[in-house]
Amino acid sequence: MPVTSTHRRRMRLAGTATAVLLTLAIPTAASATAAPIAPAGKATTAGATDRSGIDRAALKATLKAIHDAGMYGAYSAVRNGAAGWQGASGVADVDTGRPTTPQMRHRIGSITKTFTAVAVLREVSKGHIELDAPIGRYLPDLIPGERGRTITVRMLLNHTSGIGEYSGAIFATADSIEGNRFHQFDPRELARLGLKEKPLGKPGQAHHYSNTNFVLAGLLLQKVTGKSPEAYINEHVIRKAGLRHTYFPRSAHLAGPHAKMYEAAYGGFNPPRDFSVYNLSWAGTAGSLVSTMDDLNRFYRALLGGELLAPAQLRQMKTTVPIEGSAVRYGLGLFETHLPCGEFWGHDGLVLGAMTWSMSSADGQRQMTLGFNLTRYQKLDENGRPQYGPIDAAMNAHVTQALCGTSDRRPPGATDTNPPTSLLVAPQEHPLPARHH
Image 1 (cartoon, rainbow, N blue to C red):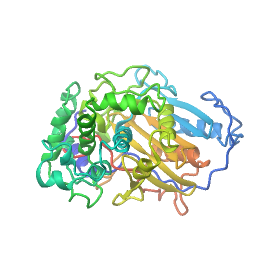
Image 2: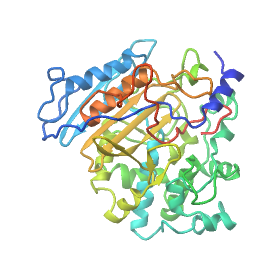
Image 3: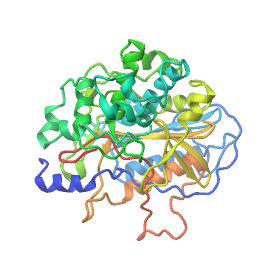
Image 4: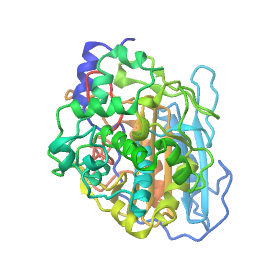
């Protein structure tokens, strides 16, 4: 079914609402000791936490429940110290019934921003970039005048620059989603489009999430290193972290085993449409990376453990600003949230048909990364907001089991008729027609 004008209006009303509603209000996780990594699907007795502090049977059951609730397919990687678990549920292809596997490659969307921020901060540590220097010092042709003098590198990385979002210009109609499937975008073109948009705020005033910030961060890397930002990130971040399945795709096609990625567009695509073949040059250094759930845990563990950045730069990365309307705070390409079982850091990512959550404890020891292949599956309420439903509840149960050792997804006072509705993370990064990111 085509995306109708009614659906476009409802998508526009959805605005920057996060695709998955998650409330994490759970008891403190049990302490853990190291144990060997168990193979995917290998479980202990249901409800039993082994020496690793990981209840493998509960993780397997809660991941299966996500598929049972209506999600096509999901894959998850959980770690607690040296111990780990990986699992998958559901299907990678709804037509053939091909099952998902834990090591499937997956488009990780805006989690790319953490990689880009790490790359910039590595150049900060070398003295090649100053965080509080005006961006016009480095990119005077793109951001001249007063704007170039008042917006700093830091403001790009924590989304307080006020620069507008370019995606509304390139995805202005329903036809543009298909029309851009194989289009190769130049990052300078994307940056100029974003800079032409109405500012979201005054420089430094408040957090306003915009992909343009991280496209500019990529161009900044190119200017100071003389390398393409993708090549620099691959050499100095991906390889340094020891990631084996993380890469920038060179075409619209993915390499390696992967699921089809289905976009429902809040009912605008019925049945949901497969967007696993898509040129992500439109997202670039803001959102085009491909990875696996285990690789992402390894990345955030290396980052938070001090393997990728010097202590001074990691402190800067973890210096946060508030996100309006959310309990989550945003650092430099990194978000922070506090749960009853501790402080967690990470990012989320959403592109057409693929979404990912990746969260780690402050020391990088307790981790969960979850990917799934059906997006914007919710119904919208009369105000155009995604409604909390069975899939969201099942995801809550899995995430809380992974991070806090319990699958109780509801805070005190919540009931089946009064579900939790708080948002976990920053706005989603992929546009739908007639709406900005």
